[in-house]
Image 1: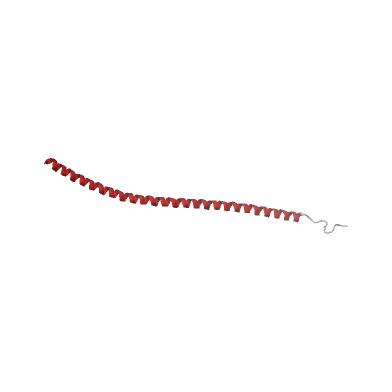
Image 2: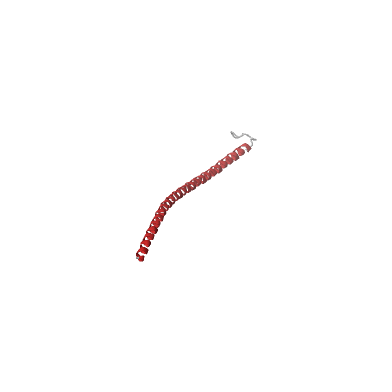
Length: 105
């Protein structure tokens, strides 16, 4: 008397193929998930580095603007100094003229 539910002569090959297919599918899904996680991490790292560089660039731009303002102020100061030099030279010439007049008397 044969066992209940057992058919004599049935091949285990379909069940073996099903197990292999399921195993391969799970492996592909796990590897894909890991690659996706790595890609996301690289993306976040790149975005953070990009934000850091943008902040440094903005800080450098502010420093350049401050330097330009300082140069403008320096140019104005240089113009004031040049005017004072001219005034002092004129005053010096007048005083030398007066001194030479006093020496002649």
